[in-house]
Image (cartoon, rainbow, N blue to C red):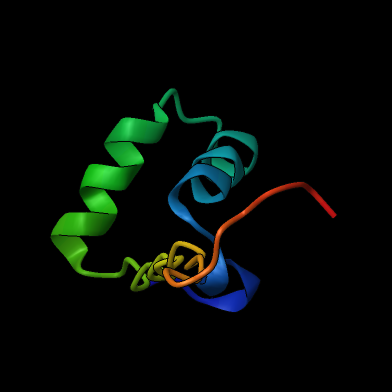
Length: 65
């Protein structure tokens, strides 16, 4: 398991850390697949749904403000 301050890293930052510390030739995609197999990926944030602005139906727009 990943210990130390690397336990909060994402797969890209973890790949950089592995390259620098252990001189591994490893791509970001490979680190992502390994993290996925080991089930150590953090859940991703959900995108908030932006509701469209509602114009008043019973009004007639004659000019801008």
